Image 1 (cartoon, helix red, strand yellow):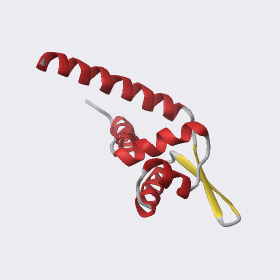
Image 2 (tube, one colour; image 1 turned 180 degrees about the horizontal axis):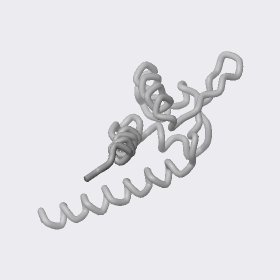
Image 3 (spheres, helix red, strand yellow; image 1 turned 45 degrees about the horizontal axis):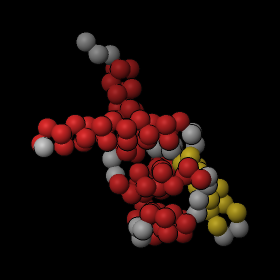
Length: 107
């Protein structure tokens, strides 16, 4: 039987994993490989609208994935922990290998 603490950990884990459940959030995460970014640079890099990027950054901030720093009129975003990119890369590797395996089965 799972304890209340176990359930809380599972809930926190599920919330964190939402980070990897949206293509624009994944593109934003991938963009942080080169360091901190502004909304306008993320719009250019992802091809998403400003409102979409801002909405996704808001969620990433709530989840504690990104940190915002204001300098004058600009806000710079950065990852709070570089291990997030390692998690991204691990998930990416599993997804690619799974898709390759599925393609071989279908061929």
